[in-house]
Length: 166
Image (tube, rainbow, N blue to C red):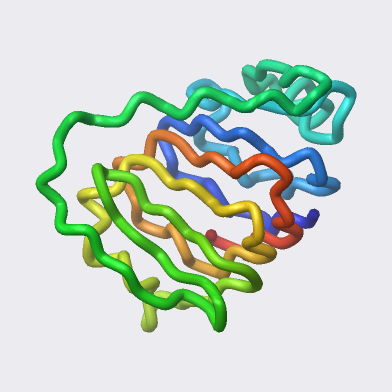
């Protein structure tokens, strides 16, 4: 898996269960969050070495790839669930402050002038869940999510690319 530089910059606090297949993480993806980030990583993985190199807190998943606890979700359910396309075979939903990307394949790449469809709901997004069959996160996908607390990947994630400013 390749992660472009600057993907998770400006996130003040990030918790991420990195997929076992991560083979490259840009040097400054977590630049602004090294003191407030925590990874869940596979033992002896590239992600573990990265966390150690850059002083990012981490916990090692068990050898069986044991399920990670889902971050505690806020009790509010005031958001109206929304479902939309974000790739040829990908959809997104927002419910209980959690943005979920599901389906199979590559996410659309976005830009400052053409933001992700959930950008206008940024104030309501605290958690992101990436489905196991998502293969690419598009550029600028999560830019501007100032309240983002956690990003998690379903077990056996097929994610291979995270584009710039994702």
